[in-house]
Amino acid sequence: MTTFVLVIHIIACVLLVITILMQAGRGGGLTESFSSAESMFGTQTNSLMVRVTTVLSVIFLSTSLFLAFNSSKGNKSLMANQKLMSTVPESQASSPMTNAQK
Image: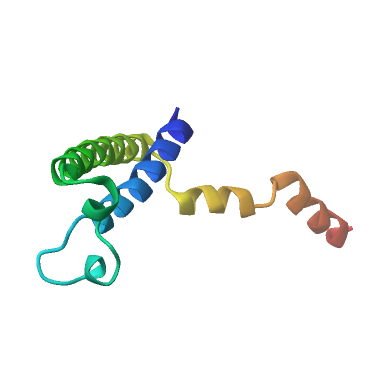
């Protein structure tokens, strides 16, 4: 489930950036050097772009909250997980000592 939400989050992020960059600027920015979305899609584009931006921002916010909530549920830290993997089992650690004592 988390992977699915993460994919939706990434798609929403990319589409949100593209949508914001396509909107007409008020005094410069990226839209001044390129053609704005109004010249590509028609005159009613401004209201459409505002709605698309609103929907994508709601999706972005909800997926961000879901991913943050899921990541906080884990009670193990990454460092504790790393320490568990790097420790050597006791049976292997005690066998060289017994050989050295003999």
